[in-house]
Length: 230
Image 1: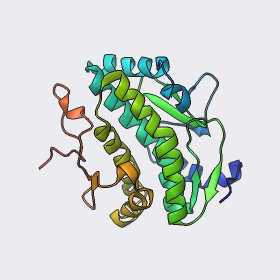
Image 2: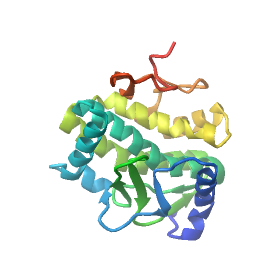
Image 3: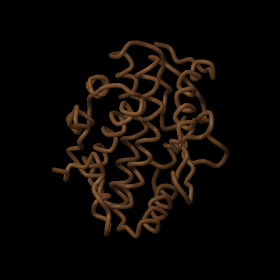
Image 4: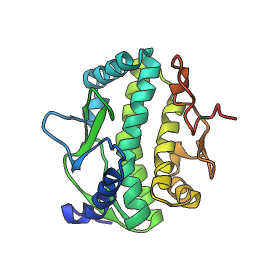
């Protein structure tokens, strides 16, 4: 498969995301998925000594009065979701997946909700069938972008890797509800991607098999997808 560098190829994904915003959903995505100057790339977040990533975790810790490992897990839950959402939309509706790699993906921390914006330094899109695109998602979003940042978070805070991968699995399945598609579609993406996200979500109930650690905050209720729910 060949990647297409074109805003036109990305437009169907952007149209769905604009529709979500018009419906009142606040997205942690840059307008047009375009990153700005001075944003931190995924590669920078993963690079030792992790200054940029550490600063974002510290900001999350102050926001929620959370210990470092909880702050890291909560920051990651947002990052995983916003980096996965364009991929899920492209895979589910159009068979056109934007390539979210360590070099192409960048993030800007925000003081208020959604607490970050994610965008692309370069918009490249790959088209294909589910099996082909599952491999692309695993090679780019999972292995190239997410895995190194998960290792960096673990090195900084000792946050458990499995719980962090659980947030990725949730990010790959929960958006199907927003898209009005069933659990079968979500299961198809997880199966096509495989790897560390396999088996971390119960479908069709959309229940996690790991905890994002939000429920550990004082006075916090469990998330709808939380594994502690009966």
